[in-house]
Image (cartoon, rainbow, N blue to C red; front, side, top):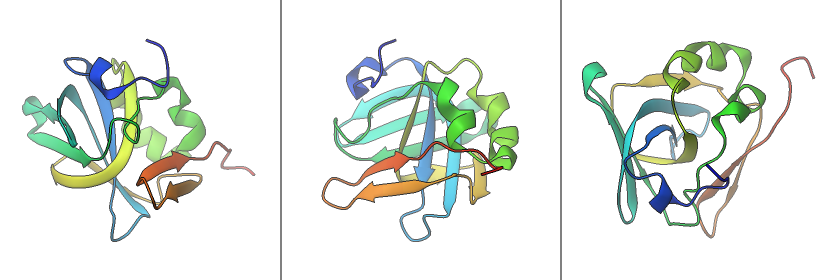
Length: 131
């Protein structure tokens, strides 16, 4: 897959969604499953785990990135929790959580986070827990 991946290319694929809580951006939710797109919502469902996560955004704001980058943008603690469900995902997408059921909830999951208030696009910063 070529990154950043447009949301249309993620449909039908196993994708890890990362939903940031709009009211508390320190809180994030993680669910991996088959992606569906019904503009403006990107959703994954993991029926075996009873988990769903829906992100609300635009085609340009919800672009997929290489899941191999996750250990560089998540804290060690968060990566330890998320790594098992990230396996097999062809991409990861971060956005504001519109709704969720189940999944993994983590506080302070990111090494750094920024947002474009005009587009609601979220940017995850690379780093190291030791820095």
